[in-house]
Every structure is written in C-alpha cells, then in structure tokens.
Image (cartoon, rainbow, N blue to C red):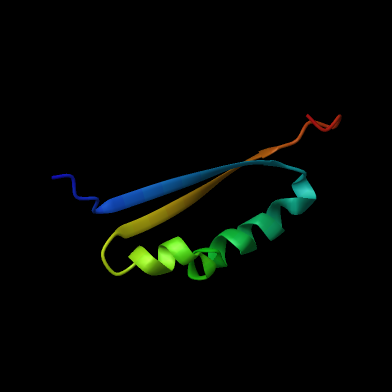
Length: 60
C-alpha cells in the first residue's frame, strides 16, 4: 500500500521585478488559506519553495 508522508511543491513564477515582493508575501501565507493543505497538514509533511524568474523587457 502506498502511503504519502511528504509532499514538496515548487512554484515557478515568471514575473516583473516589481512583483517579486508581492509574490514572496503571497507564498509566505498561502498554505494557511489552502483547503487541501489544511486538510492534510496533520498527517502529511508539506513544504513549498518559490523560484522566480524575471520577465524579459518585451514581456516574454
């Protein structure tokens, strides 16, 4: 039987440099507002990381 004990989620964002602080703030608090996380937090270790890449000047 498969038993999930740990989950790690990496968020990959491409954003404008001025959006970086807002993304970091959202990442810091999002788990407590996520229904899935709130359901499994007592039995599954869950971690996240945030990787950000600046958008090119033409928006790509």
